[in-house]
Image (cartoon, rainbow, N blue to C red; front, side, top):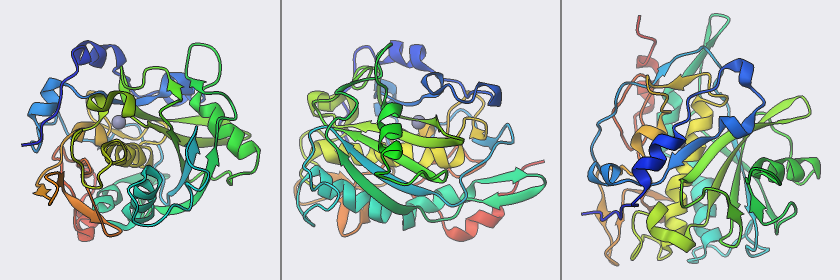
Length: 325
Ligand SMILES: [Zn+2]
C-alpha cells in the first residue's frame, strides 16, 4: 500500500549510529547526545502499520520530562523571508509546516505525550497534553551553510546564535526546531539520518533543539510518499512526520535520562515510518490525520509503558499509566 523505498546501506548505518542514552554525567556534550531518526530501511518499510517493538518504553533513570513544552521554529537557509507568516493554504513548505506546528500541540496525536511523567522527589508530574507554539524566526545562514562536520559550526550553533541575538527567548521548556533548506549541508542528513534531537548549553540553561532538513535532494531517503503527498509537496509532507517525531522525543526524554526502552530507543523511534490506518485522498496520496484543515501522514508514537504504536490516545488514559511495580 504505502510504497517505501529502501536505502541500500541503511542496515549498516543503523548499526553504526545506534545512540544509547547519555548518563547525567555526560550532559553538555551535545555532539555525543544526538538522538537520531534513522534513515528508512527495508525492515521498517515492511512493518508499516505493525507494532513490533522490542519492549515497552519505561521511566528508566529517573530524569525529568518537559511538563509544559513550548515549540519554536528556526527556518535556516534560503527559505522565504516570510516563512514565519506564510500564505495560509498554499502548497509552500512554510505554509504546510506552519499548519503542523500550530495545531499538532493540541491534537489527539499529542495526547500520547501526556501519558509520560517524571517522579522527582516523590512527586509525579505528567506532561501537559498541549505544546504551545511560541515563536519563529528566519535565519538565512548566520553561522554558515555547512553544519555538523567534525569541525566548524553545528546545528546547536544556529540555536545559540538565534538565542544570543535575542531573536527568540531562551526558554528552558522550549524545543527549538531547526529546519534547514535544501542548500544547507548537514553532515549525515539523508545518508545516515532524517532528523535528530539533542540539547545544548546556553548560559546556565540546557536548551532543547531538534534538526529536520528539507529532503528534496534525496526524497526517497526520508519521505514515505515521494510521488503524491497530502499537500502536494512531498518534501514538506515528509518533513512534517520527521518533525513530529523529533518534537515528541525531547518532551519525554529531554536529556536522555528519562524514557526509553531496553535497547535505548525513545518512544517515537519505535514507530518510525509506521502510520497505522490511513485514508486515500483524491490525488492518490495517503494520510492519517487532519490538522488545521490539512491532511497529514504523521508517524505513530507509543504511550508510556507501552510498545504499541498508536496514532492517538484518549486523555483519560493518562491516569491509568502509573509505574509498574
Ligand atoms: Zn528518534
